[in-house]
Image 1 (spheres, rainbow, N blue to C red):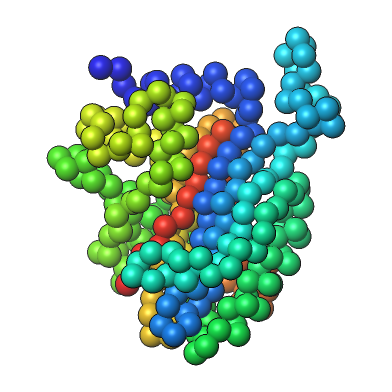
Image 2: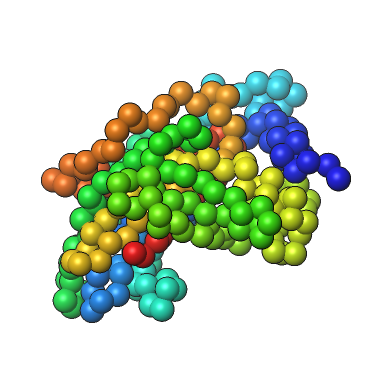
Length: 272
């Protein structure tokens, strides 16, 4: 049986020729609670390449057009979490924006979401207390990724003092699995029934991006971000210490476009 990592890297290198900036993000931002239910802002966006001619590459030249733009396109939605499931509260619309303008373009959507959430009954604001930024460095001290090889089960845990033993199961979304299935032609959308070796190799492709800890009233939640992709031109490095947020600026909360080349990143929530 061929090793999945080899298959995937081969496909990745082939795909880079055509779309080195292509990427996908699924990002979650806890805003607070209303009537005891979590309020979550969801971003589901694809990064793509655009030129005035709407062509990725010049025909026959094998080189990129000088007017290339890197853009993000997708949806922004506000959810309530009921019985551990996200239930749509309101659709904030679709976006199509330049990567260079990401933070400025996202700011009005975040402000609108906070404004809507703050007017919900019995609203309690989520306070971001701490974050550990790994930037896809597997030597990062903030997050541990664990494999139970016998059961093909995968976990994350924060290494923040007091939270080391609170591991969280990694939930791969259908969107994430479908994209890998399209690349490898392996039936990843039937994840639990594919060969265990493929499941384990697949998890080994992922690296920690960040962990964020929020307090909402007396409740604590953590948001993990993991990702995969090509790091050959990635220059960011892991932080050296836990980061305390600037609570005076909504802009501090805006993130999501830090995705590896031809990669994916996604968030998942742990309620403690």
